[in-house]
Image: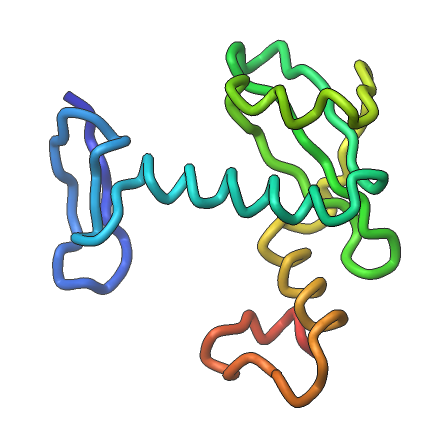
Length: 136
């Protein structure tokens, strides 16, 4: 059994015992499914311009590798750990065994910047969906 803590105001705040964190669900998707969505969305984004991407092994997380995307001035560097089952994707992407990552901003902040700078003005996100401090 594992313990999860819910800290958001859902009326369920507290600690709960669960069999597996991967099976925790919001009623629509499990955490495992949401991670799979994230993995596939990042791979899709990287496939748009693979020359901006590179990868490396992470000895601290066996069974996983790190995939990076450099967006330059647009939003900096994006990176995610991905399970080794996706290594087929990086066969033609540069491997940097000792690559560094820029952790000056969170990936969420960088994604916000990417959306802000790439989306046409007429398609602005509703303000309640964005992190205001990034859009200033």
